[in-house]
Image (tube, rainbow, N blue to C red; front, side):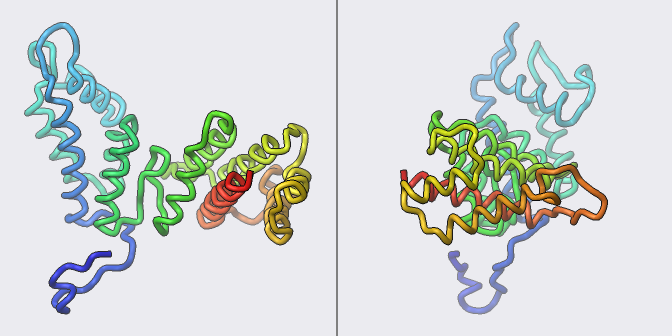
Length: 276
């Protein structure tokens, strides 16, 4: 973290905690990202029968994010009336709740290249936000190291596509702010690791425990590490485990458990891949 001049001389307080809301400084920074994305799409603004990139962007935003009737969207000569639309969106944004601002950021950038997600993350990191883009969605994280482990595991070759599919599902279930599903997120995290072990051993019917034992023999992973993940697998698979139906008296699965499993499984996946 680079300290400002006023921080170094003790005139202002150094912020080290991750913010779980969006103060005005962060709101301004995020609006800059959204504004520049919109501005980039306006470069090829033309009038005619084909919608411009900017018009397509606003149509999607109007219908699927703002959920407003399409006939209320400002058009002129077959294209969005850009000045009015931007003014409307800006007013909506600065009056929105902090989590709605992040909803808008995620919606605007969800189909953009990873490089733009990284630019967003640099702004979020600079403002000490507790949130980052990971795998195309905004999630709460505790450190840059966690992001690196998850993204590295997500960015594997097609050979390990089942692993990526399970991890992506786990991430989406974890990051759904309206209806998070922590129990099934944990299932998907452990399933990602199980899928990798089946690919490594070429044994589709093997359980995670069986596959780990074979990997330990052939790829020299420490027995203690094998044992630790075998116990995690047991935690998800025993009679009261995550993979079984919810029974009366079952302990409630929370965000901390689901996040731990996603990070731990991602890290172990990366470790195993480095060994094969």
